[in-house]
Image 1: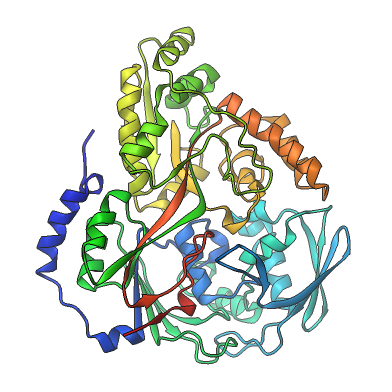
Image 2 (image 1 turned 45 degrees about the horizontal axis):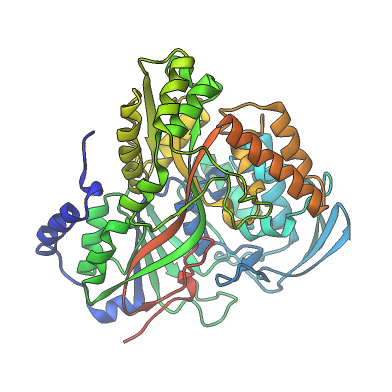
Length: 520
């Protein structure tokens, strides 16, 4: 396997030393009024309801406001655009909006904005929103008065409030006018929200420029005038920009670079355990064609699981900056059953299963990493797989999630997608499993199991928490037994930051930059 500088902190440091000599550090005064953040991936669209990428969501949080906010310390849901709510009956929830909130263009936020966003931008089949699986439970949204709306569900739905943490109301008037004038594609390059920052410019493949919303309803925030989000997929470049002062915060560092960051007196490491869960999702249906044919046999999927020492990789590659997970969800989520054991590391058993399945001479397995960290893991896993006769071909999509997502949706990702899920900050697997297991609404279904789908649908249609927990246990056991997915670990977000910039990074993986500030 070819190794890149993403594989080695030492090599990244060599690139850094050379690069530093070519960079100038901006003035301290300028830095205090302008926050520059380096993302590890490229934002693909400004149209939030046409993406599932975490960097797109993190960007949306700066431009829009969610209906409910989450306390980054303990995950508690707090009033935000919605100030109060009540349950009318099992299928009717009533909400009150905060008065006086305006979009950046001056148009008022009202209940119609919520109805329009849910019904016309998510639920409308013509939109083909990848977020549709998260909102299929909504039957309709009723506008009661200017600031009051009701969400009518198509049955009891236990996580209504958690979903509203990622519902950003759109301006119906502006949206309709822009689409009529410029077409739907316009929304991928421009944004209009109520949030702490106003959209200024989106230079695709390079950066997003934002400006402080001087009329933000949360008085006193943001503390700085401008924010720029730069897309820097190359980890050594991101490190160089951090140390040189080219960015104030850089996302997505690998554990082996923590010592390098800590050696510099002007920056600090910010590390937080998060909901994000890393896994391999196999093409058990053979959806992608002949190259996935071996994976249609559960014995082959089990052999792959037995062949890899995940604990050793977490220790040696990630320096234990991740936590082994044996279940197909984050243990912090509702219904997690950590008594379920994954398949043990047993290469001899892997060889026996491959022989039994008719693949004694092996086959070629494609792995599709989308981040540098995952590529490191895949490269290490490849060594184990080759020992049992499975050759690995790494399809490198690091920093190219929008491209990978298109291939995934169109059924062209053979072998195993090696990725993670941030759960939309929902502490329930209903924010995760439907995307990969519920058909036809799930966009990434490569393992079709009617009974599994039935259990998942039952769990999202009852308010009985004990019944939900029992159903989730069955789902976890089935996914592991059939090895539709190979769980790996829960992640920790690792940022590097200017030591003088104070901000909070929550377990929901959302940096609260709008509340951040510089100190002398």
